[in-house]
Amino acid sequence: MRRPGIRTLYLSLLLVAVAASGVAELGAQTKRSKTKRPTGPSATQLRQLELKEQKAKEEFLRQQVELAKEYESAGLLEKAKDLLQTVQKVAPEVKGVKEKLGELEESILSENPNEIELDVSKGWGDPIARVEKGKKFRIQAEGSYRFSVETEIGPNGFADSDPIREMAKGVPTGALMAIIIPIGDKGKPGKPGTPVAVGESKEISPTETGLLFLAVNAPQGHKSSGTLDIKLSGYVTTANGN
Picture 1: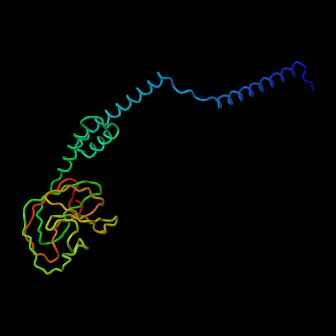
Picture 2 (picture 1 turned 180 degrees about the vertical axis):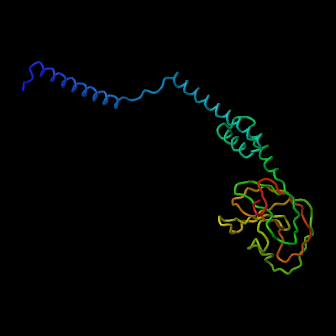
Picture 3 (picture 1 turned 90 degrees about the vertical axis):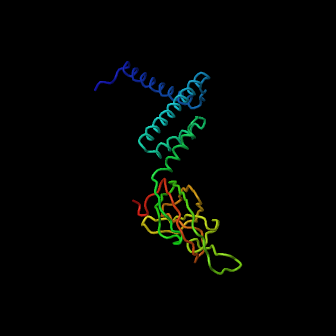
C-alpha cells in the first residue's frame, strides 16, 4: 500500500484548518447576533406600518357593514345586528351605527306577533309561550279587568314568599306580571324564576330557556274577573316549541 505523499497530507490538513476556521467564525457570528439588540423601526417605517394598520381596519369595517346589509336584506336581522355590534366595538366613533342597531332591535322585537286573551281569574294557568336564553321578546297588554278580593288577612298583609301560590314581591298589586320556568336538557321543568312586572309593556331578555307564564298579581283566593289583550313578539314560539 502506498503512503500518502507530503502534498496530499498538506492539502488534507489545510482543508481541516479551513473547516475549523469556518466553524469558529460561525460561532462568533451567532454569539454576536445573540448580544445585538434590535434597533426598532425608523419614523418612516413606523408611519408606513400605522398606515397599513389603518387601511386594514377600514377594510375590515367596510366588509362588516356590507355583510350586515346583505344579512338584513335576507331577513337575518340578528346576524346583521351581531356584525354591527362588532363594528361599534372596534370603532365606536363611526356615525350611524348606534341608530341602525336601534332600528334592527325594534324590527326584531316587532317580528313574529302573537295575540292572546288572558283570563285573569285563572292565576298563572297554562304556559303561553316558549322563550330562549338571551333572546329578547316583548309583551304588550291592553284592556281592564275587575279586581276583587274577599278574604281575611292579618297585620302582615298578604304573604309573598311563594310567587306561584301567593302575591309576588316587588310587583304592584293587580299588575300584569310574567314568570319563566326553565326547562332542562331532558325537558324537565326547573325552579321558577322571579316574577317580573310587565304592566302595559315590557321587553325581557331571558336568562334561561323555558316556558313563559302570565298572571295578575293578586292574592290567593281572589275573585278577579275579565280578560286582558296580550300581544307577544320577538323571540317567542308556542309553548311546545313549534
